[in-house]
Image (tube, rainbow, N blue to C red; front, side, top):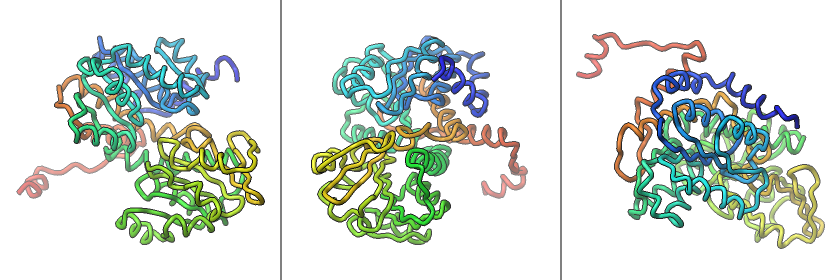
Length: 401
């Protein structure tokens, strides 16, 4: 890896993230983040680095940690340090180091928090409750993180406002579906160097991310099975042309398993006897709990790394393969979502952070304001050279009547 590889990665995404460029051009003049300390805990790679640059251009002092030990790219981290971002991360850090990096964010006494999975807010409230009064609010990027926040808010345990970026239409419709759909398969194919066509792929969960993963598998020529706990989502998967069944029924059939649920032990080691010999297991949910990696490791008679980021576990005559230790396969085994997709999600993050500063919201979980969602969509359309119709006064009067 060359000394300037981090710079090249940041320059590349800059050229392919026009929404953030427009926002940077604006905030660098207005400086809405002047005097603000921003704690960012998001997968530390080039696209996140670009978001941090935009916040800094708007006047923020930015403190950055990675939200996953295996997704941090050290060359990007080094380049961001060179550019004045306070960085606390390294690839492959221990759990203790990971906690220490997030603690460093909190100890900087941030005014706003941009979180991915909720670890920063979780630690702040558990270990540094006195810091909560310094926090104006924050934004949450993921389904898992929003779920954690909603639970805390319902219990009266969230003392500041958090904007649910994950639920904005310009995030879930594109990032979760197209971003996850493409990046998961990029990670799997790059890591395994195997074909997808002709294989049976089992996708656990049919939310927006699961829809993207399942439909990309179908497009690559796989036969797709969906497992679900929600009858409506299961019916939708069936109507979309996929087989639907319980996980235990799918275990003997699948060649590749991808969990996208946000739940624990979706593929449990106690069912190892049901799983097809040679099956590949991986996870696209935020935390490494969906595939019971610890259980498989404990039950196995032997294990070895057969290819970078692929562990083989033997159970007598049976072999199973787990990618990236059961962590996010698209980031632990790849570069994550395409830059053009994250341009929209991080555009929402930057604009929502500014909104938090300008509007003192009540504690709890808040949606992204519709005007911000529309602004990001307009910026995206403009970058694509596309435009839309505008209502005439007569049409608007008719619709309002």
